Amino acid sequence: MTRGHRPSMAAERHGVLEARFHPRIDEVPAAAWDALRTDGNPFLSHAFLAALERTGCIRDDWGWQAHHLGLYEDDRLVAAAPLYVKGNSHGEFVFDWSWAAAWERAGGDYYPKLLNAVPYSPVPGARLLAGDGAQAPRRREALVSAMRQLADAHGLSSVHANFLAPDDLSAFDNHWLARTDVQFHWPNRGYGHFEDFLAALNHKKRKNIRQERAHVARAGLRLEWRRGDSLGADEWRQVHGLYEHTFDAKGNHAALTREFFHALGGELGTATHLALAWEGAHIAAMALFLQGDEALYGRYWGSRVDVPGLHFELCYYQGIEHTIRAGLQRFEPGAQGEHKLARGFLPVHTHSRHYLADAGLRKAVRAALARETEAVDAYAADLLEHSPYAHRDA
Image 1: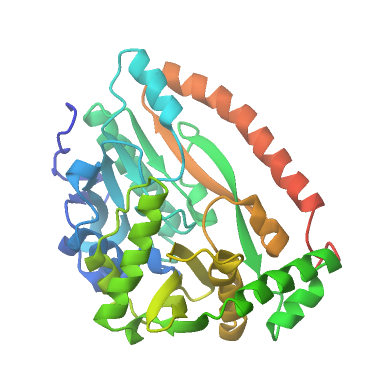
Image 2: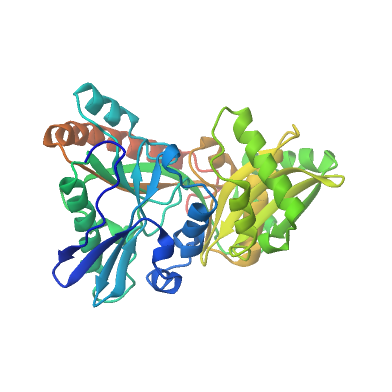
């Protein structure tokens, strides 16, 4: 397959299962797709993925081509995976730039590649959707086999499956390289109120959080927690403007369109939540979240004011308070950030799997990943030694 060309749409057989590839998720009925999800993670919902495509966030010129995989049995969808042909490595959060550079130096074409992931979202969850019946493990293996066969048939350099759920991992055999990283998640220990959470922290961390919240309180902003379907069109315009302004100010590309934000208030409105800071009649800062059955997920932040502690208030403390109110099990605020440890978030491992078609490149990267894994494990263990909680088992 030459650079930039889309793989063939021809179906392939895997025993009694037929693999089909779809250039739009709307080719797959929403009810059939969502029936394969085993939890309420909103990022794997048909509505979320379709909104990305429909509102111009998934574009060839940005390196994204939808190529979703469905497994069919007698024309009935029995397993599926969100799949993309990637022309670069932007928006993935599992960084393989060095692998790409090495393969390009060797004279190969690293792009296009295949990516099994949720665009722009470093949120762990199922990537191999197969329901929870007795056939689910076999169907997950068939999804993995279909992705690898597609790559081999078209001469693609690699396939990548990012931020996998634990149930996904056994579907990948030794041809796939294992990679781990660390995120920081907030565990709800059955707290009744935010003060109960503070009481579980050591004195220094508890004092620092109270000081940060006091700084924000003195700034005179009005804080508000809102569900997405309660915002009007002008409020969504302001929210997107804050997101875009903050991304641009940091030199990053704001890939999510205003139309996508409006979709978050429409068909995804009951799963979308926002922490807003008002300055008079205008929204001065915002943090946007999505909620599943068990977890709250922090996603985007934007601000036009410089108030000490406001980022922590909107992105973390408001989210923790909502997680407690809603009785959720955990709060996942996003990728990176050691500063989260001091605010009650603990390190957890994330998992990805990578198939590199060239045996030589695969061998070299496998050796590098062995060293990287040791370093990641040591890093996570060291972080836990500096737990913010007064008792290690808190």
